[in-house]
Image (cartoon, rainbow, N blue to C red):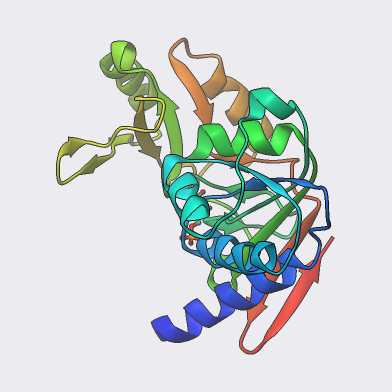
Length: 226
Ligand code: 5RP
């Protein structure tokens, strides 16, 4: 699909999700290009009088929200969120997700866990019958990087340390990301537990039970899954 059509689907999903946000809500702000459309629209609504406070899932989203005039609070100030709107890298028919393509999975998962309602917004290219074509991001602490990577190799997960132009990719928590191949794994709940059992693994990008509503842009329409 052409990039402008993909972007249009992202925008449609984002605009639909913003309709769920009401006055007085504490709103978790996701990370990524789809969430950016949501933050922009929320900013527009705030300038029209919508009274909300946002909790950003990344420094990038915090900067964007500030640019669009959304008042921000930290999770520690509010403890619980009314709603979180975030993107995904893949979703399956059970609304299970792979997230973390943008490297914000840890804070995103914390917001999802502490949110009364989670809405995922995505373009139609994110829909899959089985998770795993997209490599699963795992956040790990630098101290244990090589031993964790060796263990992931033994598990047959073909780990790759994420890099960018500056070298190793660092998350907002100054951790590393390893992307792994989970295609051959059927029991994702067990796999998630196995990964979280490795000391030094902070979090995985498997979001298995957090989604309440998923809004997908499809051509010029939106499809809502609950
Ligand atoms: C960031 C994420 C994003 O939600 C995910 O990568 C989707 O990004 P985009 O909306 O740009 O396709 O999990 O950590």
